[in-house]
Length: 411
Image (cartoon, rainbow, N blue to C red; front, side):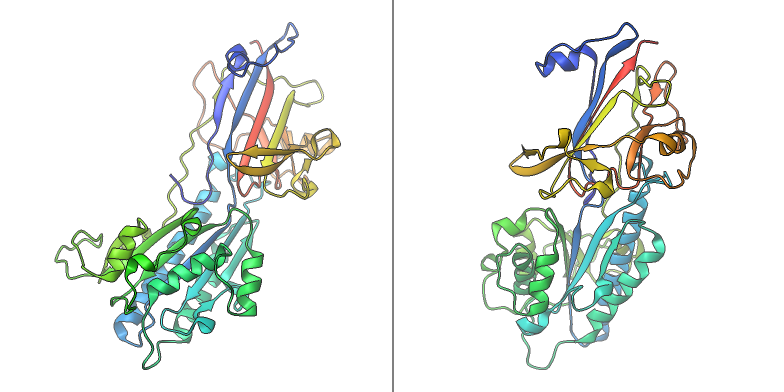
């Protein structure tokens, strides 16, 4: 599974779908088969915060670890760029946005609480908010993170408490800890609903807190929508960097309680560091359908597309969304309240460009059934490529649900 953006689509077609959902029979014209439906959870540009709690000792070994942490962050962000360009996300299409909201928080584990966090409010370059998701955008974020990790190192007499600092950072972002500064207050207020957290704790030495690790855990609510990776000092003799022997450290004990993925320090393997924070790969498969979608002589498809998304205030027209029937519609999905929006279909010149032009000049956010393909793969004989094309931000769901229903043609 890919951490962060996700796409899970359930495909149904014909009268079987109608029967399973106990809906009324669909009136069919002589040339039209039963509808084809795609429905499922969707996420593209899902907001994520990297929380880096890295050893702040003023030693060459800790400096090397901080450089490795920057390397791991760079590799993760570059993998995010690649995933947003995967064909199953539709972003090989030059006319579709590649949205993203990724931020980095540096946590200084030895510093007093009011000096511990460096957020994008303090350093704007730690925020990577984009609709293009290009590789060249990554380096500024990594440079800002590397500089922030070196800016203030542990002072003489300060107690090294990465576990306490990590728990506080997670609780703070969930609104379960009081902000210590105006910058923290502003940062928490800026976080989008549904933000995912990637916590990275890396150390050359053990935690020095006096409280048992079990009493330094983040709140249960803070342990949802998060991933924890730890690099722990170890004396294991295996050349692999994956932690395989017990380190008998407070760090490892805490990691066991939060189900972290553990690595051993020291680790000199570049390939391991490139994978430590890797978000995974998109693998959602290719969509092929048994019958072509019904399209009239003007190019308008017999399709309805809906998204259910977290902005309860509006169906954003910039994304090509509108309220179904002109009325605000709220729905419940797995305990979450979402606003249901209809995705508009291209019209006029934009429809023609969407159907025939790879660049789709001046195309707003909307969808069409296109004659173009942006993939090298082809469907098996007797099946048809899924031809819906989404331009602009029509599929820019940070997380939510998408439902597509199209009439198909008996061929």
